Image (cartoon, rainbow, N blue to C red; front, side, top):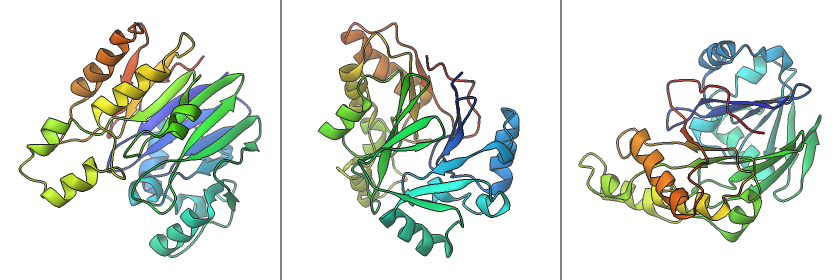
Length: 261
């Protein structure tokens, strides 16, 4: 049985929990040890049972809880070489159980196969993850500024997609509290995905086997959960795929168990 939860997603922290029954993984570890433990407890997950953490990139909202692995040495940490080097610079240490992967080279942890794929974002070597388990496919890309052909290829045929819908372009451009330089960074090719671009991607890869779309990394002041959801649903309706449910991950709440298969 495949079970999936978003423990939280946004600029203050990101983490996803996946269990196949045999294998249990965290995708990113962006909450401090105490907060992460509390969120795992909410879903009945025991850190002693977690096999590994997959790190997408080195930004603090994805690695803030790295010290958690010092307390739970049973958990391996997987990252590509450049991300590991950046993690070491940011945190001053690397987990003892660090294992390196190469983008585009699938590897297995228990009964889960992971294919890390490159995305465009303002990190050293960021990735998304194509995850295969129990005959299902989950695709995760929570920080990316644009949709490339590789992203489309890795995310198609998924049973569950977790994709960034960071901002509404109008709300971002009209936001009085953000400097123009920051707006340019967010809107740029290496920034963050807008609702519209997320919606276009989801509509393009939608198929009858897509069980759930989860919108992640929703901005607190340049977006709303309702606006992100309605924008993506609009694109799905145009593609005649309006029956596919769209969920929005929250920053301060653990999600319900997410339907995958």
